[in-house]
Length: 320
Image 1 (spheres, rainbow, N blue to C red):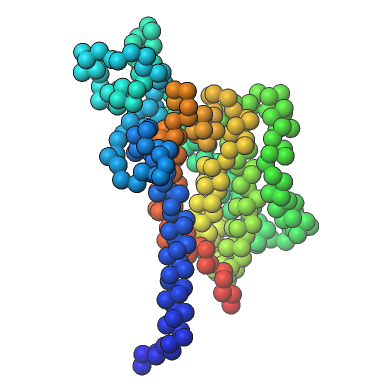
Image 2: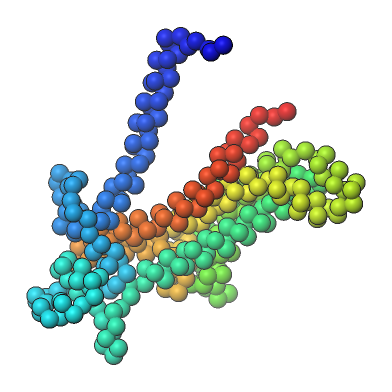
């Protein structure tokens, strides 16, 4: 028999839906604005009132990946026609691509290298943090560790201090040991920063996995490592996925350490995007295009793990 809802319940449900839609619009508006600005001509980026309808252009992306300078004189027609399509977009924006005097090739802006650095550092640090966090959490969950609560509090306390507080001491130490402006230096920092989060989150998930599964596997002749690999890990997959998403987002968005611990070779995209300036004034379309591309990996990663993430967020909410 279908449940009959009262008039008050119907009104409440509709109000809840409206509230969710309003919150969704508020949260998605900045993303929409960044995406729209990334495809705007430069002269429409700061108009008042804002320009909503416009003809999209790829000029900001062409500028993002190249070094450029102000076009002092109108470009010759023959030069314009001979230029590749992406350079024509730069010409149309009143600028010209800076070329190497010896080879004549277009000079890269460096955004591509910073983007690759972000991928390398974030992926490796996330893998290390989740791997070590899962193993550590398993140890705390399944074995009696002397001073367990003290150790867990110590691990958690590493997240209580804002990163900027330890940035200067870390900078001095990294410069002394030769880790300044290196990929391994950032990977160590991001792994250490995310490890406490991974340990605490994964311990909650592993605590929810019945010990009887492992005990049955041990009786069947499995070693402790085999039981962990074949029993615990598959059961904790949702927790691993949820933890990986949050660790990746944290490492991907980190700004303070990336700004202070790098200068050129290992610099990631976050501190580089605001440095993109145009001729005289900040080119907000180029900054928006860099931010838009920066959103893509996180969106894809979260989308691929969405099913595990939804399950992981609710896992353990109901206890036996």
